[in-house]
Image (cartoon, rainbow, N blue to C red):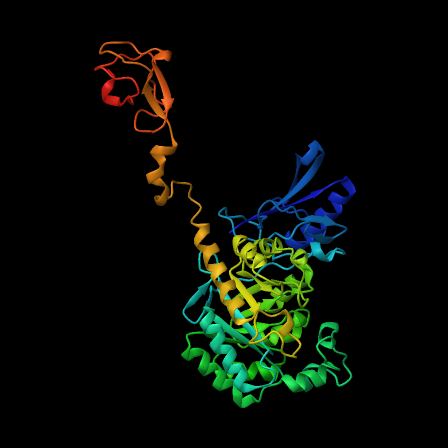
Length: 456
């Protein structure tokens, strides 16, 4: 199969250099020119004239131009997935180009093929109800009984899944690691001491997973280290959650992908290039979802940048959600409207508790209201087809106009413009009908609607 890709360049010297390079890569001996590689003159945006090199073998996706500059490959946008075409070519299709660039936002790997994301009985993605993950996190404060209480709260609020955080403090942070400012404000001295107080015993996880299943919830937990990931996999979790702080830990991501489970990856603090690298590092995972996130507790609403949800979905072709650290329901409503497939919301049994995340978490009634708002928004979005809603049909004749007789009109009269007027209700001929100039078949009294049977 053949495809074609184009590089738009300026200058004869640059074209000759790139042509020699391409010929060497894909056309045989260095310095020879394959007959199927050739330049065509074209006009670029703004009417500037340039040249375009077409190679049967690769075709650009969605109009992306791949520029060749000094032998390095640069993608000016985040697109450019190589696709097979339908025209056979005598020249061998070149391999996928690995773009190189000094601009990290312009040099990104292509997206791997993924299976649909399925968690339990739920398919996650566009066209499906938003998956709401109630994030218990570490709001159990190291108390197993409180962890069970949080599962009950999530189920009562109507969540689809409940999620915790699984870690071994010694595998996560050094003894001298300082607590984050928001953690210090809640009384933590160092991260290590804080996490040691919050860690649950390994024996608790099976009990918690069983409790969630009995309540109809998908059980999830964020794995902060490989040992914890192995524990969760042994429990039979439906997916592994990756926290924002591990997004640039590519060896860790690759090992998690090797478990063969779907991954849900948060992207707080990340650039698009860092997300692209993480997506590539997880290429062996059967399915992937990305969560846009702002890593602040709480996060100001104005920092949300929710349009990034669409950016991630378009760039990577995966389900994208919103890990919501804001207060209230506003960003959740907006995120669902923008196409979020997943919502993750921290919740607590009591915001007055001392732990590091309680202050930025929803209380039980707030979580229930949050989920209710999400479901109401989903119901309001509809299918996008513009048509009258069933509930408004009864009001249509009372809100629209139709032709009515302005005076008594006799049979055989040719209707003049002053003989009719457009008035409510719409029980006669609609305004678009041709009435003026037509002859009445029967008399019509003043004020009565004109219907089709009145006219010849």
